[in-house]
Image 1 (cartoon, rainbow, N blue to C red):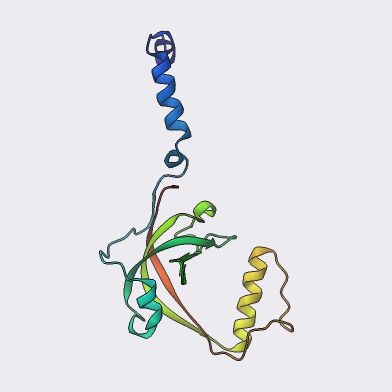
Image 2 (cartoon, rainbow, N blue to C red; image 1 turned 45 degrees about the vertical axis):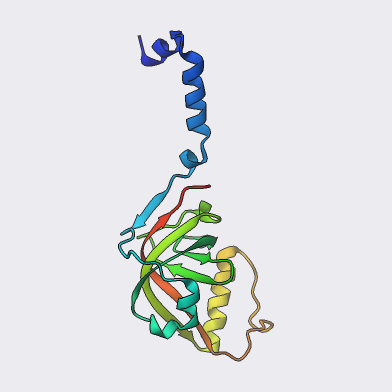
Length: 168
């Protein structure tokens, strides 16, 4: 007799069915917490406010940041953008080493990595925007893009590890 037959003949059947139904429909079961890459070793979180207020003080340093995922690379999962409600920050990882799941949006992410500044010429910035549009299947016209006169610089984390919270 199989375990299923034994359970189904048991007087505890309603209780067992309730437990199974609860487990199988639990959001944590559908999207449990995940450790990505090397995980997290840095204990103290650096706020995005502090990091973005004086990014040059953090360039080249390994930090731990936390925020809600607001965007994910649609092609390879090689970057996520996290937000603390007021600011956002991109976490970029090496392609195919860490892959952020498409269902990460809305989940809390703790990430660790090295802070870097990306500086571009106007043409490089236009090419970058065209690349982002292409990833999303959107059109981009560099002739009509309103990108101002620069400087074209942004701060990102070259991620080495992350912890993605379970779906709330």
